[in-house]
Length: 330
Image (tube, rainbow, N blue to C red):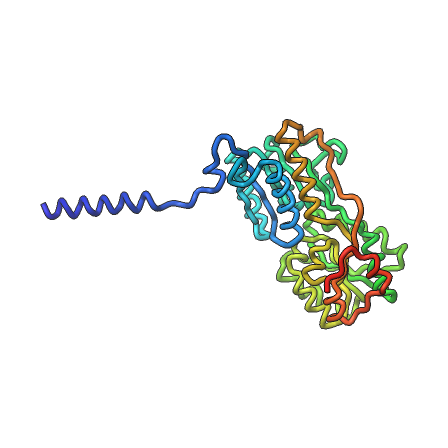
């Protein structure tokens, strides 16, 4: 009898542990039939991409689609790893989500290759046509639509000249495997000669290479220009360390990088870009066809200057440029 009681206790304990074990279910696995199941795939976290994602979610919440209410959100960050992107995309397809937000070009390309059926909203994507996400800006013709963050590259190079009038050589660090970065560098290649600027380009394949790339340009360039490259911007402190030690200006492609320490930009507002994408998502939830919805951008660019960085790098930003700025970070 004693052995029988012991066996029953062991069995009961095993059943109890089995009931408590296993992985936590993904948020969308708990979604009710009435909820919209939204998957968000993001290549890496940094302020610009996070702001675009938040703008998107804010618009949905303001229109009745609040996470946990009419909406169930499964947010996944790939940590800048392509294999993670593929795993996330496969999972979203397997779960048959109602809608996907793909943040930045690598996320969008991986998601678009994984499904031709689930509507995909893109944001922070520089050139959706070159990335083969859509057939044209005006009429995508695919299950993909959303917003582009194509920057005013020529205006940004001009901002370098306005702040550092003696500039002759500008260093660009970028990941050549990011289509969005290559597009911006191609534009810079086209406009720089007519502006009297010589570009010095160094490519990286991992975040760990960014500081060495910046150091390799010391003595060869008069300033840095950083496009909206996810790998480089997520490693901005490494570039800023080199810039501050060598008194070099860093002009970048978007304002959140300036808030994180770069000197200045003239660019778009990623939060507002995300809001525009959210409004497009509402149209799709109301029955619109992504294939018929033109890719949208943001009109107008704002100058943002970090005066704390100007002080640490010993660079004087002319008063007339400061007067034009939308925001001065002090």
